[in-house]
Image 1 (cartoon, rainbow, N blue to C red):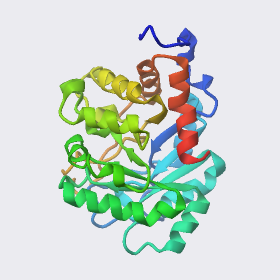
Image 2: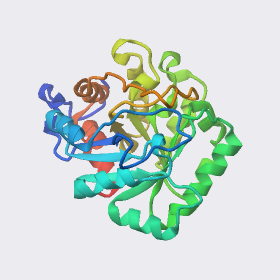
Image 3: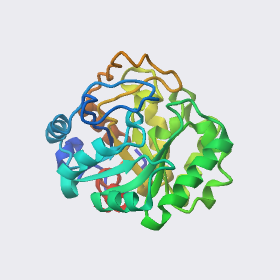
Length: 300
């Protein structure tokens, strides 16, 4: 623990319920593909994972709010996400996916429903060309800037590093999924990680400490701790926690057979939240991570 930090966290503060208003900033909801059809060009076919199941989980671990992120399996058809959002009321927000067919009227309706961001998913399809990434990010940003939304991206650290010079020109806040896909085994001195920390320090970027299994191969993802703590130290006001429930998807850039269900990962979500709290050095940092930062970004 950093001796210069004030307000050391008490032993019992690892109990998630201690943080009223705690938010899981990265979850997905799926039906069985009947009410809301799958995107025909998806990379995997998920099982059903319902809002009721998610609410039961959050009730057990002490989470009061959630941000539903539109999964790639639905493409830009946001109806399943919006259906769940309507049931949540002010306890829910969402991040949508849009394309060229999405109208400004549809964006305004989504805003009224609680959408506060738009996702640019590059990693799932293995798209790492920096010029393509820049085009997608700036197109999305221009579409939603007037609504005050952010752009969220799932991409890897080399792609983000290649965009470092142009990201300050993005007209909206950028939210980076899953540690920016920094590889935990390579530690905090890997190429591009300093850029991500600098972007955090600038205040224009948030990073989600979510799905450590996407960056680590060790039991309990122990080598992700150094990465997480460095990101928190870079700017504790710009980090978020997300479970990535129900832990879907194929490996990045590796499509699965669409006529088969791709199983969700078996993850201990209670441990995931406790692990994230272990990465924080103080009660103040934990409260920012779980409550204050999500409330600011998603306008709870």
